Image 1 (tube, rainbow, N blue to C red):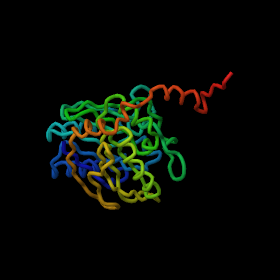
Image 2 (cartoon, rainbow, N blue to C red):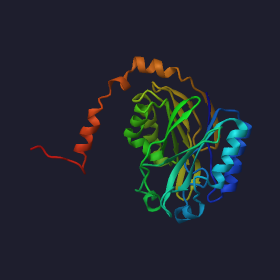
Image 3 (cartoon, rainbow, N blue to C red):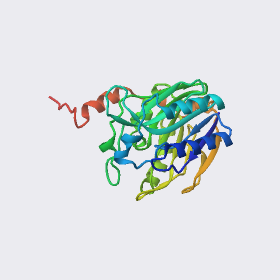
Image 4 (cartoon, rainbow, N blue to C red):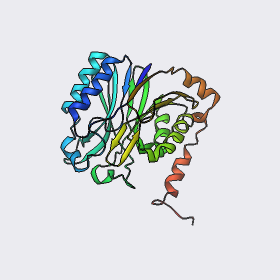
Length: 275
């Protein structure tokens, strides 16, 4: 399976220009799957303008990428704001995975970052569902940026049978060191391929560092994009490595599921004191 990770600098509030650039990367580089960063379609910092550029799951942008995926026989992953399917006026920070068949899988970001320069909870609603995509190359779980700090998500995907987890991101320089610590950890603690695609460039006071990268199930880095530069890097992955990794580092086999029930009871909202 050949992956193409695109560290793109999206234009703020210019969906047409961003789609054109994304399409150019797809046309000029042959791959089985193209992975763009968080909010690549619109730019990351739109604030109240998110409402003007959010689309429904059957909106024009996703329809266009369906045509591209079919034409180039590829999978395409990217981020955009999407309206809730059930409640009017609610918006999600979402990852979209488009299949060559036209099937579209949507993941809504679970953990919204709302500290320092980040204000996601002012504009988005939290996701509540996992999205495990069945592709011809294997099962893929989707997460977005800050989700990487919560290992329960990737653990859940590995228990659901995921072969890889894709994290699309809009990570600025202030978070770079932490993200690069967590990527190999998420890979080896679940013996999965961990794929990370970050945007690049400056938006208001934030500088996004790019540096998209891939780790194999034993935390070996397979490819890494340059920092602070628009780029595309490709990587061939062999899913047979998962069998080897799980034989030699059997973390999936050794998981104790009962610990998750314990964690629920000792969490700050559900603590049950001993009698």
